[in-house]
Length: 398
Image (cartoon, rainbow, N blue to C red):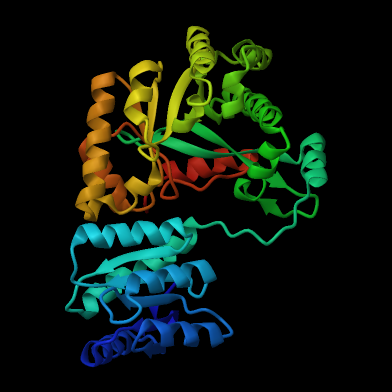
């Protein structure tokens, strides 16, 4: 998407700085420009618009409603598609504000230090198109408990797969199975819209079993086609309270003629905490049977080190919140470096999630990360499309 097609609102209390920003945007060929001198008037203007602007450029240090409070309102009320922070404040504070905005579900183009230049603005606004590519947009869908039960029974919930590739040679070595509800009308619904309901209805374990079974079926099919890939499947925290889970997973995998050593079971940091003794028993038995164990979204909880010290993990997944933009944010990079160093000392493979740009890739490669997963390689795709997507990834640039 060309930046000249963007609509941008500038929110800046300093008159000269605001006029300078508007002039720079015009020089970049952006015609859809508007402005406001403070947060409250900006919210009024945004609320009155038929369509939200693509980008709101906001200064943080404003009198009255400061930029942080303003961004919170914009995010919660969905008054803009993305935000660009403009400030000369402490980088650590800017990073916190960006993380807050992303937690609200707002796209963040990063931050630009004052004084503004055309080059700085162009570089930041160019990332808008990349962020659009990273977001799958769901149509609003009303989901009842009955509908989700029927969807699971009819086989409408199925795995899509996102590749994991080695940094050393770019070779695809694994895929993560991610649930998608493919409705009869063709609409594809992402898990954010239905996983919570499934869990509340006590269907998390049947979903995990289904995903494991279908992932292994597709793996076996790809094996026969000469495409050998390990598969990663997310398991429900409730499964760790079931003493029969390890045997059940082994039966599911072996029924598809798949070796458990080619299957990685992913669990989040909080999964083990509810019933630690029983969970540790299940996890130890899974490792005994040969399954790989991955700690997912590493660093987003509060018990990471404790988990790593007593669970036989084989893999660590660095959360995409730390990966995105770490090449230009020292604090994020420090977290990534520390995670990689810890993994090396523990003998764990590392998958970096959310690798979306060449800069992300280069930084992680320089730091010695094992594997990458993210939109730079491919989004999650239907299983029948995976061989084509991987072939396209391996194809050399013309």
